[in-house]
Image 1: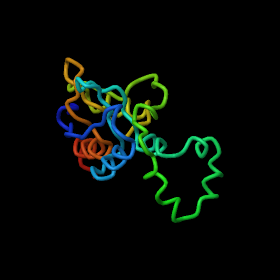
Image 2 (image 1 turned 30 degrees about the horizontal axis):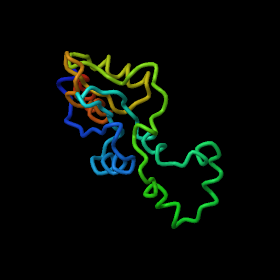
Image 3 (image 1 turned 90 degrees about the vertical axis):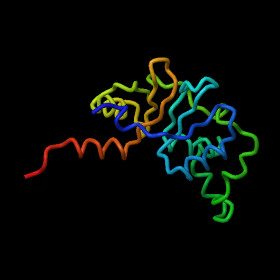
Length: 153
């Protein structure tokens, strides 16, 4: 089985999109992360959901997580809606050593190895020109592995 067998059409964001919109897109699409693309639909970053959530947290609270305890519950539940004009591009972490990107002909083993190496439950799948075709999500990859396994005795 190859990546093209399990690729899903996944929504994407650009570096110019507001962080709040990116969080909503991830939540409403039930994605484990987001793929950031450039204007030509080439992936520039694949962000695990935890990195997307981190973009919503004020920098002071990232450096000192204990500060979050000082915010009352009502405001703590709504903090991310006060992001203002912050864009995805402004919040991107430093470039990773290896992108979470595979080609359409990648095997399941290649996908699993890369997911583990980059610690991402989402991989971008690209065509021969490097343009995004879709994504492979962890859940779908695990189901494919289970389906490919011989029946248990």
